[in-house]
Each structure stands twice: as C-alpha cells, then as structure tokens.
Image (tube, rainbow, N blue to C red; front, top):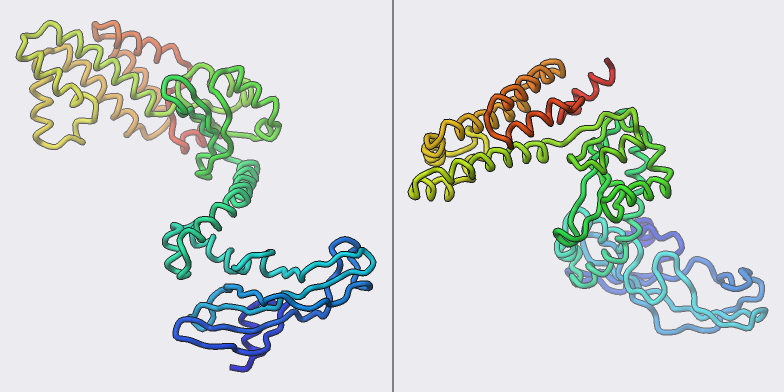
Amino acid sequence: MPIRYINELLGLPELQLHSVVSIHETEVHLEASPVAYKQACPLCHSEEAVKRDGRNTPRKIRHVRIFGKKCFLHIPSVRLACSRCNIGFVWSYSCVGSKERYSRAFRLQTVNQALVSTAAHSARMQEAPASTVQRMHQEALPAESERLLQQAWHQAKEQTDLVLGIDDFAIKKGHTYNTGIHDLRGETMLDLLLGRKLDALRTYAEQHSEFLNLNPKAVVMDLAQAYHTWISECFPKAIRIADRFHVHGYVIESVQAVRKSVQSTLSPRAKGILKSHHRLLNPPADSLPEKSRTQLDQLLAFSPLLREVWEWKESFSRWYDYSPSFDVARLGFIRWCQQGKGIEHEAVQNDAELGRGNRELPSLSLDECDSRRTA
C-alpha cells in the first residue's frame, strides 16, 4: 500500500510518514516526522526566533491498530531553541503527551473500551498491560464523570415529565448517612449531598440554584418527614410519592408485631415452629415454592388473628399490583385501611389510621402521575 494512504489511516495530520521500518506477524513499525519545520516558542508563542538545535533519542509511540496489527510510531525528539527568550525546548506533539508512550487516540480507544466493559477486557483487546489500561482509565475517569454529570443535569432540565428520586444511604450504618438525588426516568444520578437532616437538605437547596430550577412532575422518596418537608418547600406543585419498598416495610412490621404477640401465647412446640419460620409471612404467597406454602399454612393455622393480618398484608400487595387507575386505587386503598381498622391489634390499627390520615396515596405508578397531573 502506498505510504500516502497509510498516512490517512493513521489519522495524524501533524505527522508525515517516511517509511515502514518493519512488519511482523503481530506488529508494524512506522517512521514519521513533523510536517512543519519549526514550532512556536512556549513563552513568546512566536516562531521568528526559533531554530532547530539537534535531536534526542527518537520516541517510540504505541498507536491504534492498523491492518489488524499493533502499530508503533518512531518519531523524532527534535530540540528547539528560542534566541529571544533564551530557552531550549523539545518538540511538542498534539497526538501524544510529553514523555508518554501511548498516543492520545490509543488512550481514548482503550478508555472507551474499559468504560463499557472492564480494564482487563480492554487490555486483552489492545494486547497491553492491564496495569497500564487501569491507569489510563483512572486518569480519564474524573473528566468522564464530569461530562456525564453535566449531561444528566442538562437532560433533567429539559424534561417536561421529570420524576426525581430522593433516598439516603449509609456511609456507616446507624451513624452517618448521605442523600442521593436521581432522575428516575433518565436513570441517572444527579448529585450526592452530605447528611439527610432537614437543615442539611435546606442548605444544599440554597447553595445549588440549578436544583431549584428543576421542574419535577413527581418526587419519589421514603416516608422520612424531613424529605417530605424539604420537597414540599422546594417543589410545592410536585406529587410526592412514598416508594413501595418502604411503605410495604411498615406493613411487614405490623405482621411481625402480630406474630410476636401471638407467639407468646402458643405452646413451646408451636412457638418454636412459628419463630423459626416467621420470614415466610413476609413475601407474597404466590412467590413461595410448594413446600414453603405448606409450611406457611401451618403457621397461619396457629391463630385466626395471624391469618387475618396476613390476608390484610396480601391484599395490600394485590392493591399495588392490580389497581388499573387512580380512582380505583384510591377506593381500594380506603377499603384496605378499613380492613386494617377491623383487626384488633394496635400495630395494625396504627398503620391503617396513618393511611387514612394521609391525603396522598402511598405510591403511584409514573403513568398515574401523568394522568393525575393532566386531570
């Protein structure tokens, strides 16, 4: 292949290929030099007083593959001197950093492979040391993270049906918590803020005007009062949604509270059976295998109250899964609260009363948010 076509394959307009040094089974070595004769002084940014001052040892640069082989460029390390500034410097290539042995194109290709897979996979693809690829990945990660963050915020600002997610996570369980802000429809994280108390949340909103400039249709969070107060202050028109996991957790706690009170009244053998298999009361019945369902029936037979509260829990799951519209969901939720008020146990009645006192349903699907906002 003529050398001029290889120049085009390299994609390096600042270099002019002179010759093919060698071609092996897995490698190709090419000799190239700068197209320009001189380069501007880094201080005065002028070429007038610059002259060549010899060469150092040539540089051997790994470039992207050509012809299915590893490509190495041999380029001169040209010494230059500026008589106006009285300094000496070495030719600076835009295709490769100072003292680096891998071209920028190679680094970019390698990092992009590592971002969508792993550093080890990219190293195998490029036939390069895994430690080198890992270092390239770590060096590129801050800039890539900043780019993705800016992209996520831009997407959130442009959305007309934005749904935010607010949730805390433990840095040290039981001691230190932070808060994450998510774009649920865009499936991206927007920001992390220190703490989860109301004062910390309000401080964040005061210091980040871009957050207050968002226009969410709904905000999904747990039942923490601090989050609901904060969101009602920042986005008073947004629908506040308590996510299913936390709401269902309260129902499970009520079931287990009834189980403990019933357990204390049973015989030692029945008490041991109920205690050792108490987790069978938590998941939906239709998700249990046949053996576990048989054991569950045995547990429910110990007490009519336990069976009643378990059926109350099951009706809550069915309400979540099968409510076809907001109006039907509201009616079903009211009926579920009434069902809980009929169960003679304090833990259940407290949850049912709390549900009846709430103006909003504990959770809505994103589609229901759309229909409700339209209405």
